[in-house]
Length: 155
Image (tube, rainbow, N blue to C red; front, side, top):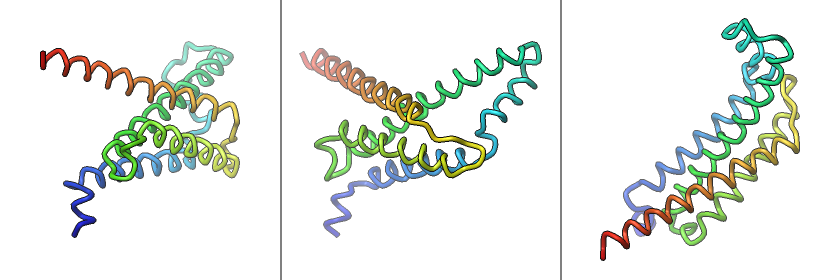
């Protein structure tokens, strides 16, 4: 019973379930043939037939890197949200978010080396790290604004 009280109203469990679901989504998407660069190029060619082949290649590259940044930004935010209310992790939620999201990035890239339609890349891990850092910095900025607003309203 005391362990149940430690977990509060279940919000901690819900947040970690969201993290788990997001991790599953990342790995299932990586496994899907639709996640390949070729599939993305075909999709873009169908939607934007006026684009030349070399233009599609550039768009695919930039779009895929943007997806990496956004995906790991979201991973860091979700992990932070769970860690920040977890009894044993709430003292260091930023570090937890950074470490777990970085491990996820490495595991995802390693997993992609095992798939015929994907390739794992150290460059992609670095790009994922940009998303992770942007996510953590965004949280810190947001929390700073919240703190200032709270101080201003209490004065």
